[in-house]
Amino acid sequence: MGPGPCNPYPEVMAAMARPMLGHLDPEFIALLDETNERLRAVFGTENRLTFPVSGTGSSGMEAAFVNVIEPGDVAVIGVNGVFGGRMCDVAARCGAEVVPVEIPWGQPVDAEQILGAHPNPKVIAVVHAETSTGAHTPLADIGAGKGDALLLADCVTSLGGIDVSLDDNGVDIAYSGTQKCLGVPPGLAPFSMSSRATEHIVDRPRSWYLDLNMIADYVTGGQARAYHHTAPISMIFGLHAGLGAVLDEGLVEAQARHQRCGRLLQDGLAKMGLELFAAEGHRLPQLTSVWVPGARLPSGMSEAQARAVLLERHGLEIGGGLGEFTGKVWRIGCMGHTARERNVALCLAAIDELLI
Image 1 (cartoon, rainbow, N blue to C red):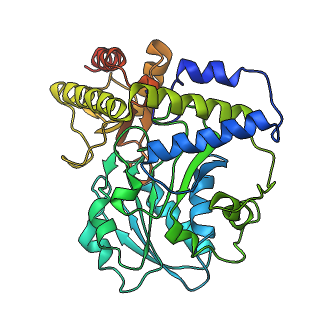
Image 2: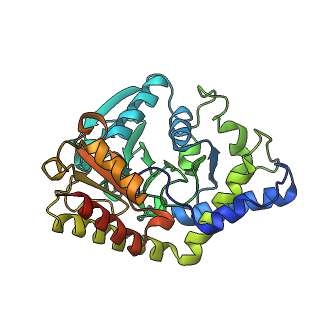
């Protein structure tokens, strides 16, 4: 139940154990193409440049920035948690003039505030689902008002758990991770870029490995498939299966399951007298943040020790707070295959047993 890697779908583990194929084997190439089609369905996009970057979610973040930012470009970035701050760091390393829009942690990024932060930015970037706080920032109003800017969205904790709909929301560049709501072990970063954004790919990005020029021509209509690097075969087997599990259940149904479980968890914590951290009306169902109930922990027990007891006694992993909220907030993930009502009931019972 932690905010990190969740238990994978059974179909994923079976797929990752299948016999190895070569990365240029026609059977693998066909499976990779089908994986990309499944990613388009879950992202809610027609973007041809949609594929899994070989690396965890942070590689998707870096790929998003290095391919469109040149020195001097303006990047307006919403910072309402740890990962907005990381985007600022990556953009600055690309030479961007970074305009951070600071929002109190636990609150969503305000569309009017971020759209008014600069008259002509190259990129406007937000974290759709802030993993460090459990806050959800809606994308539609930002996408509608972006003007000539490219809208870049961190969807690491949102993809598969809440509606993303890149095309409907006007998102030009998005990246995610496999280990959250897709129920796949960490190791790949689902990535999507609109045709509008591909026109802004820089000639020589500050990364060879993440340079989309090496594959963009083929993906967007060229004939020759480029050989770029050896793909992580077993990880793509797993992603193919995880996306298949989500689509077999139905994307809307999977999102509704996350909503039910999140509501049950948050209502249960509130009934215990615990105070939720993220702003009401903008709480993610798949990641619940709650103030540490220090006065109700057993005598002499720190919050870290309490989380260790829950892990050792119940196999329940709860994440600690980050940044200035270290030691003050707990983060409880309920994502992917783990998002089941029975797991919520066990989580609530274990926390209730611990508290005094």
